[in-house]
Image 1: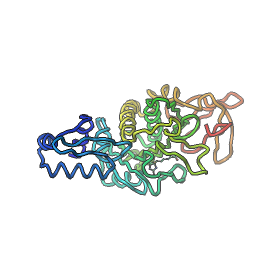
Image 2: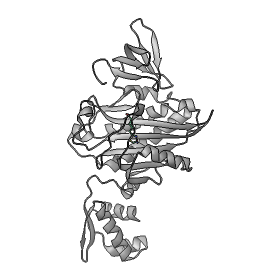
Image 3: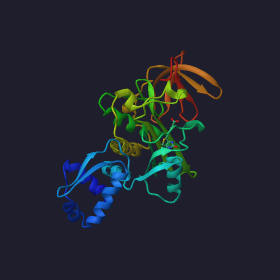
Image 4: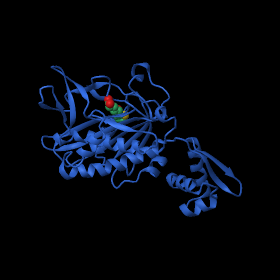
Length: 326
Ligand code: BTN
């Protein structure tokens, strides 16, 4: 009912009478009033004028269950989004829900994470009111060895959604960072639970720096937010809706072949480090070459000085630009 009242207030752009809301939703005036109070508590500025009704004056960048429900237009993803004001990590919560049989497409979103997880055991700074911290529960009918490509699929969805924002030129740094003007705006962490030949579930966690005004000094040199790059605040719920819509389309293409065959050309078109000299940091040592693209498995192809092409698998190495982060 909350999502429906919010939708009607937004669509009207003017006063909506209490009577009209009661009749449309078959509820009492008190019930409508209670929902209006809840929305006001969540930060929506709603005026109530005697004999005219309710009018939404401002909603800035509010993230709430009702706002999310109104922005998600997917067939399978995020049908009942789980919104939490605070959580340790949306990946941890999504894994817990997956273990409790949450269906494919379950989406967990939090306003802040107290123990956000990054790749390679690092943390992920997730302050309140600023970013998108979300995780998807996926149950893809593919072999476990194909799951790592889902991280690249997620990067494509984020890159496309960000590129739709005026003034944002988003690119992908293989395998799964999304960068704007050479700095990281998005990181993705995919975790899997599998048996020998079956995936039980995959959790794909996506962190997007949206409206931060500054970053801790240790990451300020290589991290940025959409607001810092455009000077404009971006609505997080709307952006989540777009990321999910693109993810759903790319995911369907991924499932047709269980790999990146139908996606790799578009992925390579968005790569910031394609045709650039990169350093590959392996356990056994570091070597340089030119990144030429990806193969159907989503591995990076790197040409070394003697002209041979090596494939680099995302789980095993870290790739840096020779002249900086990208
Ligand atoms: C990286 O190190 O680049 C990956 C960062 C992934 C962060 C996201 S935020 C939402 C989800 N929950 C987490 O704890 N991590 C991921």
